[in-house]
Length: 368
Image 1 (cartoon, rainbow, N blue to C red):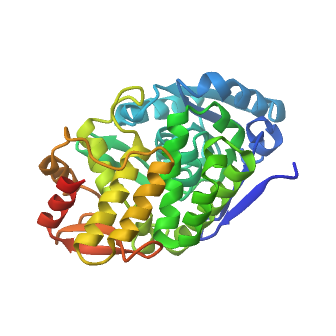
Image 2: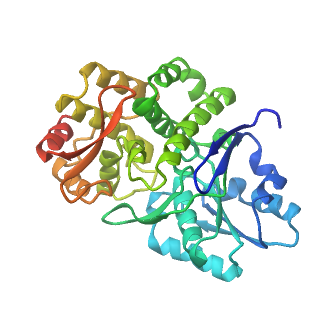
């Protein structure tokens, strides 16, 4: 296939991100990462009927000697629990998976996080191949090896760093993605321009119509540029002790929103992850303005671009500022000395700011 794009992720456990339509049908490519004779394809109730059997059959066509099974979890963030993690581990046990087995995570960020965490824990770590089927997962959660499940107290509080053996982003899957989910993915795409690449925001603005209509070439370019940004940061900081925290622009606010809403089904009125992050980025930009770090003009540029991609940019009145602040105190980015946020000095110039005063955070929430 001549139109494949690749992004190399370096570090102590290097791997390649491959971006192209039709990758899920490429049995030879899928099987190239199966070292042993056991594979578990983990998916959810929305994705499995569309692609699950095709992936299993593609693997079996190349590896008739291997035992290849599937495990399906309910869709939605509310399924990213310790109980469903236990179900995936039980499936590996039933499979008889050995240390050279491989988990194929077929789906969005929930599947990738949960399946990756199961792979990280089974026999202290087996291979995982990420097969993201949403834009958000392609540009963010499938890359970098962060795996986790949620608790009622907060998102991603139980997890492990476990880099994948490969990421195969089949852009053809975006054609079956609901419009709301496609739009949500652009929040993470826009994030890369906001933290480090102002010209990328200009490109996104110029190509918004093509991207929202599902143009393959435009989407591949946006995914490749986003992944290249994330790969560069992950190489420098694989365990999020420095620069990698910049990838969390908007996420402290966004995770608090998701936690307060109870990780509801994506079919209801609750915000999904991308929508919560979009609001969170605007709140982070406004907090930056309040602290004298950035201008109102920069806030407006970001807000307008997010709106152009059909994303929400303000908090509903039903969400209480004090309750959101309470969730932020338990966020993984908080430290003993106080709240820590990714803020910016303007578009493309993000930085981590520690010991942010809670009254400033409340002011941003109440204005948002």
